Length: 277
Image 1 (cartoon, rainbow, N blue to C red):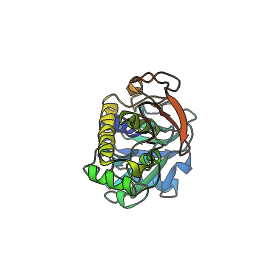
Image 2: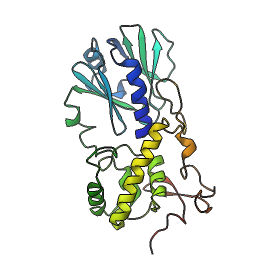
Image 3: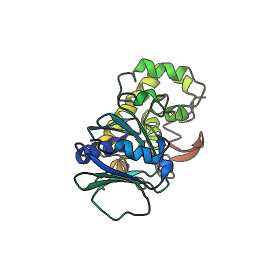
Image 4: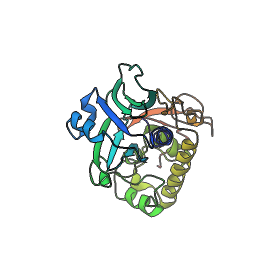
């Protein structure tokens, strides 16, 4: 699933190709992707004649701002946006086509069909699900040392599931949680409330630094992720534990282990990320 750095990269590339374009027609070939309004034909009619003014992001969500509508899009596992000339042949995984008045088309492709789209009056998108319950992301001023330490102290869950909880901190997924915990030398099965203030501050700092570096390198291409111009990210070459099971830790040489925490595949170094006695 694309995480914050990948979605931010997609946002930046979309800004270069769709801002200022006016929608002529929208064709929906898999109506289950459209969640609000419930009728995909109404979805298409609402967007007709609307001009894209901006492309924003919150956590893993893209937010297209049109004249008076906000389109909230979640890519889920395999969603992609790609701009083509008019009448580009569609592959079998193209489920929504936004045709613009300049004879270009934005295709939404999704192999697994898990993506979602919602339309709201512009300015109200954060009042409704799916955005209304999102926690701050690591770049937000609200994601302070005080906030992070406080929420960790209030939960009895393990730290990895807490970091994956989008209501606590939005944008992180499996890859970057494993990497952040390794950088902060914190075992993924530590109980969140057991972290000291020093440890939570260090983890917060590493999360911010990690995501900044990943955004700079266009995110991580692990399976099929590409941006809207068909380019892959390169941060996968910087990963230190994710996908590195049975290889030596870059710090101590201990073999990286893989286990499951909260039902998710989890990579860690048993020496650098010890559980307290």
